[in-house]
Length: 133
Image (tube, rainbow, N blue to C red; front, side, top):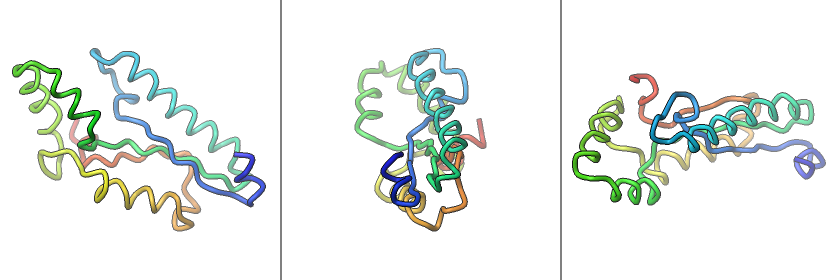
C-alpha cells in the first residue's frame, strides 16, 4: 500500500472464492479464510481509496493443479458427486476455466487503468457458476 500511495495509486488484486460467500460444510477453514479475504478487500478499498489505491478480489473457478490434486484424493463416488454439484452448475459449459485464457485477461484488466473506477468488488470469474447456484 505505502509504495502505491507514494506512486499516486495502484491496484491490489486478491484471490477470493465463492466458498467465502456460502457455506461449505467440508471446507470450514478454507471458507472462513476466503470470507476474511473478501472482508479485507472491501475494508482496504474503503480505507485506501482516497489514495487512489484500488482493491478488488477475483473469485475464480479454474482447473488448477490444486483442484486436480484435490480431485485425485476423492473416491469415485465423491468425484461423481462433485461433478454433478459443481461442474453442472457452470452456465457456460461443464468445465472449469483455464487460468491463462479465462483468468489472465481479467487480472490484466484489474491491474490496468481500464479499471480505475472499480474498487471493493468481488468479481466471480466462474463461467456463470454463481448465477446458477
